Image (cartoon, rainbow, N blue to C red):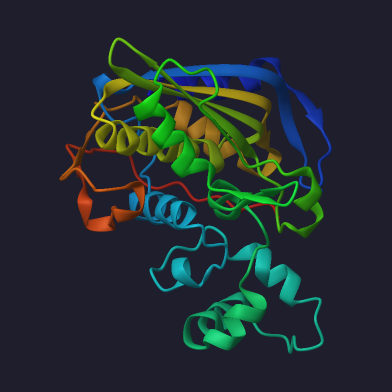
Length: 292
């Protein structure tokens, strides 16, 4: 995907060294936009192998409204493990367990998972149970119904940024607002991301919101438009520089296709088995540490 490689090159060419919350350090720029025509294929990175299983299960987890990592852990999806583990290490029950031992407890012990596996009111809670002025709002269901009822609306917005809940969240939402747009029978989605980890996070975000757009288009009997990714603080962590440079040395391969095998009755009716990636070829995996 040339768009992604242009993005990371832009950061390297124009960014400034900045300190950050994790103390890792970054090269950072502010303000960037990528556009992906979903009719050309599914925008899954090919300059490193992507773990699509994690992308799909995380998205289904968001859609379900769940905020506990146990669902992900039981499916060997590890992308959220570090945050509850770091919180657990500060408790009296911590007894020098490794992260692997902690995750095994989350998997095996439901009561332990309920106590230590929850991430607070993050994405799923805000999408499906946004609370404000004493009201609970299922934003995702509302926006899907509104796309069907009033596709020309300029209010087709879902927000994960609930200022009153930020301190309760393991990680305040990075991809914090998305808006749908219908024109010519095509559904497009624009995401605003306040903070974007270019190496680890952004490839997941592109795939996840592209897939969400495809799912909703199918439910609403619409054709595919674009996924537009608008980013605030775009950064490469200093411990990811070599990995990014390796990707830039690789030629992108042909973009794959995503098949959604059936039209679900509702967004909640989709299952992991409903998705099939076709013709995906990639360069080998490149590993990098997550900064917490």
